[in-house]
Structures are given as C-alpha cells and as structure tokens.
Length: 417
Image 1 (cartoon, one colour):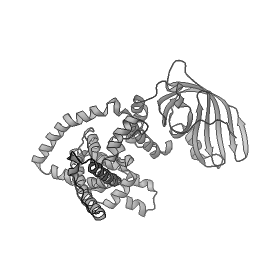
Image 2 (cartoon, one colour; image 1 turned 90 degrees about the vertical axis):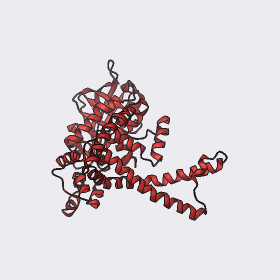
Image 3 (cartoon, one colour; image 1 turned 120 degrees about the vertical axis):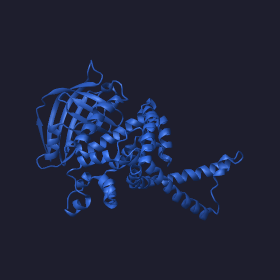
Image 4 (cartoon, rainbow, N blue to C red; image 1 turned 30 degrees about the vertical axis):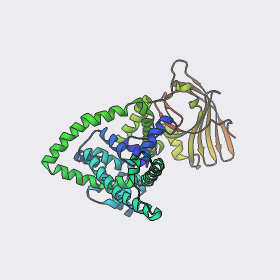
C-alpha cells in the first residue's frame, strides 16, 4: 500500500528513525485519509481538462491494453496506455489492469484533480466505511454476542472497557488497511463524475474556483510549509528514494530511454532534490560509504553495452562495487553467468572536497567459464557523492556519468576467487 498510495501522495516511513517511526505509524495504520488530503492540498491543482491534454500528448503513440494483448505485444505496452481516457470512457477493466502496473500514475489523477479528487475520495471513504463498519459490527456481534459501544471511551470509570474497545478499533483499522486500493479505486471512478458535476453548474463552478483559491492560499500553503519542516525530512527522503528507484526500474537500469517528463523528474530527484536532503556530512569519509553497492541505474555507455551484449555469449547477471574506504580498496565487478569482468582500484577521499574521492586502477581480469585472463589496468579519476545514506548512494564521475546504487551488504573481505 505504501508504494501504491502513500508514497505517491507524499508520505513514506523511515523505519530506522524512532521519531519518524511514530509519526509514520499513526499515518499508515490509521485508515483516515488525512495524509492523502494533506498532500493533495500541497500540490498544484491543474484542471481535469489540462490533465487530459497533457496525458494525451504524452500518450500519443499509446495503445490500449486489450489491443496490445490481442496483438501479442509485451506487457510494456501497458505502460503507454492513456489512463485518463480509459477512466473517462468507463473502460474500467482495462483501466485497472493498466493501473496495477502504474499505481503512481493512477493516484496522480486524483492529486491533479484537486478539489474534485478530494470530494471523490471522501465519497468513496464514506461509502467504504459505511459498509465495512456495519459488516464489522455484525461480525463482532455474531462471534461475541455483544455490540461495540464507543461511548465507553468517554467514561471515566471504565479503563478495561476502554482498552478492549481501542483494541477492537485498532484491529478493525488494520483489517481495512489492505483495502486502501479499493477506496482509491472508488475515488478514481467517481472523480470524472464529480468534476463534470462541478463544471456543468456555473454557480457551483464559481464556488469551486473561489474555494480552490482559498484552499491553496490557506490549507495548501500551510501544507507546503509543513512539508518542508526538518522533522519531515526523513519521510521526504524515503518518498523520493522510492520514486527514484521506480524510475530507474522503468529505465531498466539505464538501457531504456525514459520519456522527457520522466527523465526530467529523474534528473531533478537524483541531482537536485535528494542531494539537498543528504543526511551524511563528509560522505567520502563516512563509514556508510564502505559497502557492497549494487547498481540500479547508470548512464555510463560502456557498462550498459557490456550488460546488454553479455560476455562472449554469457548473459549479464548484475553490476556491483565493493568499497572499503578504511582499507582504500574499490572493486568494480560485472558479473555474468559463469564469468565476470573485475577491475580493482585504490580509493581515497579527496583532500579538498568532502564529497569527492579519487581512485586509480590497480588490477583487471576477465573470467570466462574456467579461463581467467589478466588485463593491464589503465586509468585514474574521481567521483563525487551527491547523496549517501544507509540504503542508497548517488554519484557523478569526472565524465558526468550518473550512478544510482543500493546497498547490498558489507564490503567483500576477499578478492576474486
């Protein structure tokens, strides 16, 4: 649910931070839509017509899911379907099939709809809990012979009753939590109707515009200000990291060219936003830098060529680096099935810039099945750490190549076998 709902709406949990864990638990375990509405209000509110124009322009060459399946196309064709058109034309089966692969885009329709999306969500929320609450009450009565009485919570002399009632309500919310996509799905279905209702009535439309301006100037402005508070920085980092890795996966680690909008967003997160939230001072000397890092994205042409073509018929498996800054060792490894290309280097923090490190190749070898061929190591250079934490590393090298890597474990203690 976090990746499909909360992460796209601006809230994510840093489970390593005690204070953030408490805040995130309240948001993620409760079924009320406060977090969603908070983040909807913090975003710009284009009209549904503007959203449709933008979506149509970016999906000019898209095909619908049914046509893609009938033609035997790959599942990637689903990623190009115009979700807004499917929703407005009530092709719901096709819409939800595509939305399952692109949950962020689907939730973005509610965000972009502004007040219409908020109203649609509240309608879906009320309908959902009217049904779920009644069903839960009846089920509890059928098993215990009693009805849940929330009035116990305001009585002064009923501590045991309060604890039992709170436990029941918490259990109810936890049971409803996995059904959040159902509430959001209902909101998506209702959003075009709510928007048409508002647009077709001038008085309602005028009130909508006035309320929208008031909302943006008060609640929206407050939400944007709160979102920038330092206490929420860990939550923002987790959200942005999730979004960055989703885009990296969509780009197949750098082999596929993203569309203009996705590439701009990827570059913004990787080179501007996350670096501005970097939690690690002096990253090139930080113990966090020492680890085995698995490449999730790179635009370095040589690495992508080797990954795509393989090693003399051996398919690529993964690309990783083993860094031990205290020992001054760096190993770059392209792993293939029964083979590898390994380049060893020395590494040291730069004396003048805290985020920069210098390296020099020291050894190189190619292993193909049982044959190991040493190669002459040639070259040296530097890299700059744009972002570093316990899970993610972003860096750029002297040629301008970008690397996004995820921590896979501690640094290797031994070299190649």
